[in-house]
Amino acid sequence: MCGVCGEVTFDGSPADLQAVERMSKVLAPRGPDGSGTWVDGRVALGHRRLAIVDLSEAGAQPMVDDELGLAVVLNGMVYNYRDLREELRGHGYRFTSTSDTEVVLVAYHRWGTAFVDHLVGMFAVVVVERGTGRVVLARDRLGIKPLYLSRTPGRLRFASSLPALLEAGDVDSTLDPVALHHYLSWRAVGPAPRTLVRGAEKLPPATVRVVEPDGTQRDHRYWAPRHERRPEHAGWSGEDWADAVQDALRTAVRRRTVADVPVGVLLSGGLDSSLVVALLAEAGQTGLASFSIGFEAPGRDGDEFRWSDAVARHVGTEHHRVVASVDDVVAALPHTVAAMSEPMVSHDTVAFDLLAQEVSRHVRVVQSGQGADEVFAGYHWHAPLLDVPRADLARAYAARYLERDHADMARLLHPAWHLDEDPSRAVVAEHLARPGAQTSLDAVLRLDTEVMLVDDPVMRLDSMAMASGLEARVPFLDQDLVELAAACPPELLAAQGGKGVLKTVARRLLPPHLVDRPKGYFPVPAVTHLEGPVLDLVRDVLTSPTARERGLVRPEYVAPLLARPGEERGPTGVDRLWPLAVLEMWLQAHGVR
Image 1 (tube, rainbow, N blue to C red):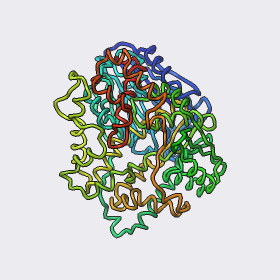
Image 2 (cartoon, rainbow, N blue to C red):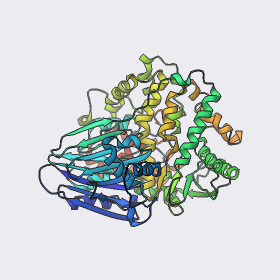
Image 3 (cartoon, one colour):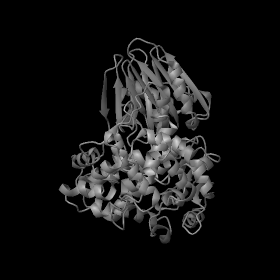
Image 4 (cartoon, helix red, strand yellow):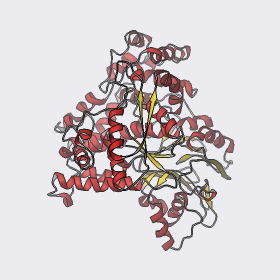
């Protein structure tokens, strides 16, 4: 788990190593254990290392193999690297390290761009063919690891975060009005390849991009599970599906224990993280460190410790509580916002940031329950959409999830930022209408897994964990598990109030009272209710001279919200003020004008 960056030129000029070093400096928190650069004329690579496997210098990056004529940087973890190494040895290859990075390099030499088909894990990887000058970029199937790119005449730059790319300079940082519309209406989701700024994009998940020496490029999407029923599952009962999901989840959790350092777990006490803990215990893991966070909130529910404590006692983990005050939240918010790859509005982002800061003092790797809701139909809008006719699906989805309609966007934004059409609902409608989804809920789960999941929960976890040099692994996004869930009848997924199949599995491993309880989230009262010093911070940033000069939102829209905070919320419960404040804080933190 690391940070990667680099530059490739197409006009004969040498790569700008100083620009790469500026990007690398921003990425330093992602890799506190070492750094490296490599330059070969028109190509420069940078790397920040978090040592998880092969802690020796043999595992350092950028990794260059003169015999094979390749150089590589990798962010992420390939869980099946040991099996791949043995397979490649059978083909006559030799290895000088025990790292997954070298396996990826050799796999590329053996299989070319099809190397990604052999990788099980989360990764953003850049391979340089030294002989041809070709550069290959690839991102994992679910987009767990990010890769941002900036293309200008004669040059391509890439980095593990958008702020790092901006720090390199020469990026058109004016706001993209379509991406702005997505951010404000789609709860901060920004479908790839767009980012909030015009001059940067992100490589879509499950994509290999080949960039030739003259700058021409081609993309190949190498994975896309079909949300349809399969003949081999005909006649399966609900228990059969639970058996299959339990086996696949057991494998997913086991895969994510691969490391040369201890692996802990984030334990909120909810169904998903509790299942991960139970399966680790079932596999015989002892001395497991678990971590949960709560907030001081007089008169309000500020934690779920009663649940996480009960799971920890049942399984026998070494449990750690992190308790944060309102002052802790206020103090953390500038760090939280600055660490965001892109602005994020989920209330629990600051909770992840504070938790990661504490967890990283104990372990370098954790497993997390992120992704289960999107894959296994756990959100409140999933079950109601089960029987909605396909012709009405886009409208019904938008009503339950999108924060603003097009008319509200016109009331909010200065006229200079108005768009004639509604691009956010257009993306939703197009995605839901694509072939490969058998029912309405299949189409919704595909949208949530391929788009919303990538740019909300997954980005949130990666940004906050890596800001403290912590690797977070997500077993619910194991490729085999996701493919299995996509084939599962949606009525089984949505049963029992959502995540029906997972709840059946969980009852086999956990006491029923820990399974059959109301769904909870990280409660962050100071943000959820926007009061006290957090509200003061929001008011200050939205009325600051910089915000007024930017002229993005209408003052007459914001003033009533500030006068009556908490009175206006979107369909998912987010205060109307919060996305505006986070956006402005992020733009100011990174000098975007």
